[in-house]
Image (cartoon, rainbow, N blue to C red; front, side, top):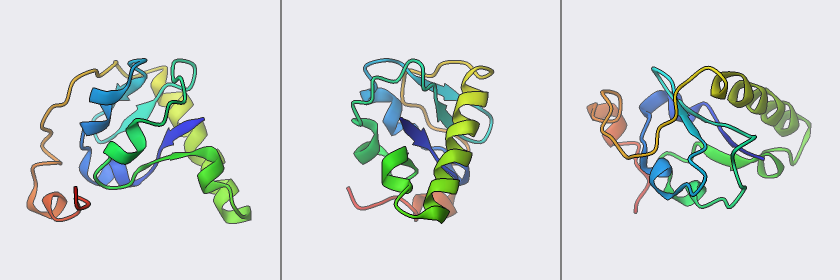
Length: 108
């Protein structure tokens, strides 16, 4: 299972949606989530996220604290992907254009 975590809520970049072959991303006001029933687990979105917010559950669950974090974010992704609309194209968001978020982008 591929999940979006808390770092997305800080800046909400949408680079990841452009590479998703399954259109599994959903857009909320402050972050994106992945619909686990539509995700094909290709992981193409992981390196596209400029703030490192996307992981597989296995990547996070290396210890007990990581397992709890993975379970929490898997539940959040599942819950909100059922409520929020699909996003399939990159777009500039108010958050991603803020000065504080521009400085958080990983080197590309």
